[in-house]
Length: 198
Ligand code: 5GP
Image (cartoon, rainbow, N blue to C red; front, side, top):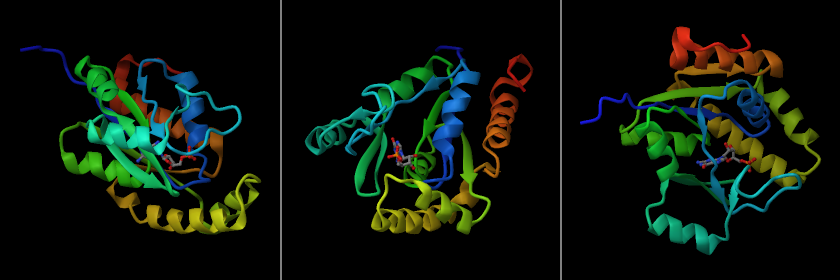
């Protein structure tokens, strides 16, 4: 039997427009000793996104084949598209004692939590208030009013899941929120050994 200690899965969730993708991007440049999962999705690729780096962009048929093959640790429909976490990447990482970082929605987090197979660290990024979240969603020029409304309704549902997370970080200021998550990771995962930018 291997004596190697398993890694933990870090889950970061939060509603659309809360700034979690920016926070995760900033963390990635600060914390190197982690595996950053790349999800698969059926949503269209956005400008500046790279296939295989930001997401694996798949057709719905390809995605469903992967579901059938058991390739996902979890998958969910978010805003009308499929998103899924590659199981092998995560399982290999944690079996090798590496911590693995997932930025996924609350449905996916619930699936992993309920499987009870993994040692989780769950962080929820919350908006300062709902009005501010709406303002941020409207400010995203790429989304039309129906999309904004759907994302806002989803956001309100997502906020109800906040209580199941180990930590809640309110994003009033992106730099402070990123540092708060970094401090949590430093304390929970790396203890004394972590020398970061805090
Ligand atoms: P976006 O399309 O804006 O990149 O992401 C939309 C939502 O899908 C975000 O809440 C993001 O966290 C979530 N998401 C991204 N990848 C996954 C995944 O693999 N599984 C699940 N369940 N949600 C994901």
